[in-house]
Image (tube, rainbow, N blue to C red; front, side, top):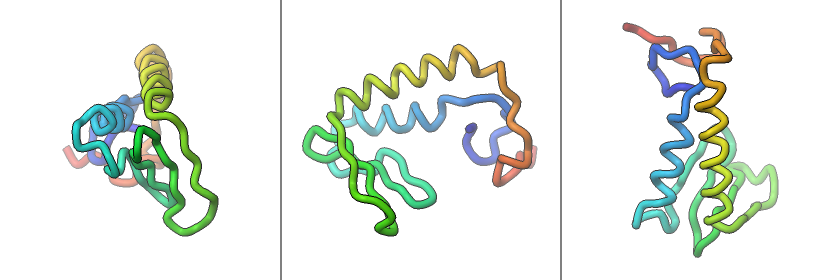
Length: 98
């Protein structure tokens, strides 16, 4: 999804890029790489941990390098197909005001 208030209606790498940037930053340890609805993904001791914000599931962890590799592959797929989809306004919580 594009970020809130973006005029774009196609697939976006915005959230992937944010997570990759946070993961690669020096301040990544303990930092939330992504969060939303009921889950938070944080960097911790060379691992990436998905945590439920409301105790809906047990924590899941994986190696940070593997997570970075998967995000990089996912990003490449989004770029390849980003013009193949049109995201309707219904699925964009806050519409573009421009």
